Image (cartoon, rainbow, N blue to C red; front, side):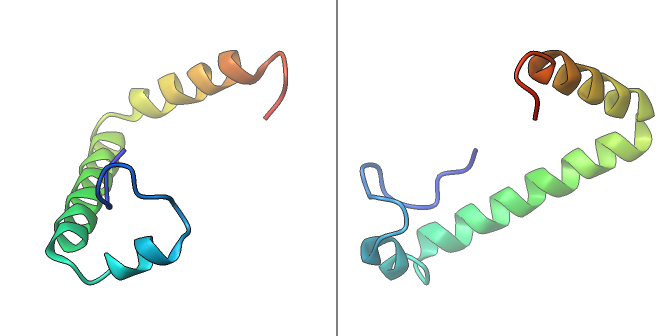
Length: 66
C-alpha cells in the first residue's frame, strides 16, 4: 500500500481531492507505479510466482469464496 494523503485524512472526501496536485500525491503515485511495474517484471521473469500467488488466493478464499 502507498499512502497518497496525509495521515488521518478521510478517503473519498473533498480534503482528499485538494491533495491531488500536491508534491505528496505526485511522489506517491510515481512510487506506486514503480512498485506495480517491478511486480509485473518479477511475475514475467519468475512464472512460479504466479502459480504461488494463485495457490495462496485459492487457500485464502476456499471457505468463503472470492
